[in-house]
Image (cartoon, rainbow over all chains, first blue to last red; front, side, top):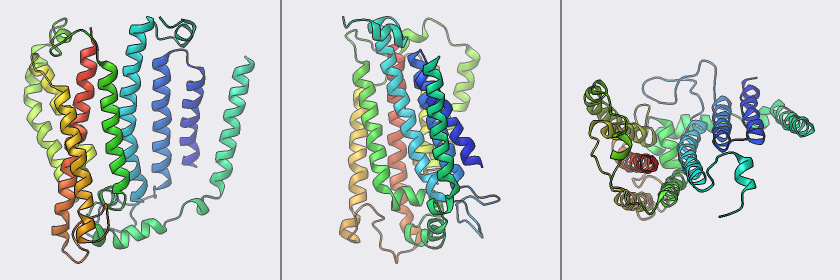
Length: 110
Length: 230
């Protein structure tokens, strides 16, 4: 059931991406989609009552370590991609004087 | 209005396809991989923390490209943010609003603790929760506090980028040593029969390299954003 709930988070991000009028809000929506993907993968590997995948002492019934290892990569990449997108937003604001999609797309290149 | 309805309909269709694929979850996902890691992970990678074992041994190729994307993103931020006006450091942002003295004092108290905790998380990444990526982020946060303690702090971003490139080459080289000793590339260069303690040398070395790389990348990105605050 919970993977379906996390997929709703991804859909919320997609809806926001399609309807947001502000560039910074679009960047936030990408971040929301990313959070949904992370939750989805962690839910797939989850196990009710399972222990953490560190085999220190007697451990049984660990959760799946593979999605966790993949999601570390996703989090770091997501942080850098958000930084890159926000830096582009700053440059767009300096160039066009606005960060609304409508005004930026309507203006001609200087 | 019609566009909104079409959009919602499309999202509902995507959701339906996802739910249909989730009904047969057992064919998509099973626990055989987990059982393999549980049975052989410590012996093959030498890491008690299976997550570290996966991203530094089984899937080092993935981590390598992740480090590459970090370099590309940092140099992209640097390249986009360059402008004609020469600015020495971040002072012009902070002199507008003076940092409260209470904040400066507490930053001085917290700074060594954060730095020590970050290094602890990096070095113990193979036996306890943590690793290069997480510890690197903590160390980067600790270094960024220095901006509040000392307003006149300067950071040479070009030098940071050079160090990052050298670190990336070092990670590739350490991953490739296994080609000589084991005949396999991008894996632990100690043979399978060596003890777990000896194997952890490789894990600690790679964790420190990745942690330094992530910390420097975060600091470089933050400095670039500070320079934009005109």
